[in-house]
Image (cartoon, rainbow, N blue to C red):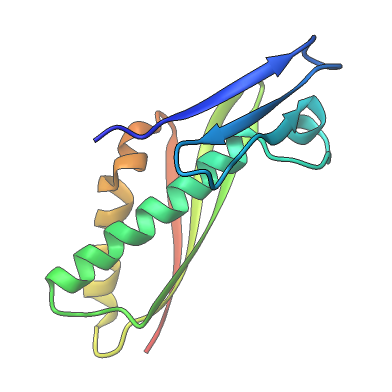
Length: 137
C-alpha cells in the first residue's frame, strides 16, 4: 500500500508560501508558510501534521492491542505535542485518556507502552517518544 501527498512552495522561505494536498482530498491545497510553522499564521505545518499522524497511528495500534487481549476500548483519546527545536524534531509526546472497562492498570500500561513503541509512525520517527496516560474504568 502506498499513500500519497504533495507540497508546492512558491517564493523565498520567509515571504513565500505553499500548499499541501493529500490523496484522500482531506487536505486540498491547505496553506502553509513560514508564519504557520514558526509563528501563529493561519494554515498548517509539517510538525502539526506529524502530530496528527502520530496520534492517529498510536491510537489505532492501542485499540488493536487491547482488542487482541480481549479488552475492547470504549474510548481512546490521544493528543500529541511535537517539539521542533533548532531545525530538528526532538520529541513527540503522546497524552492518552482511555476508557476501557474491566482492565487492570498494569495490563493497560503494558499494552499502551507496546503501542507507543510499535505503531508504524513511532517506528518512523527518529526522535524521543514519550507517553502520559490516564485510564478511566
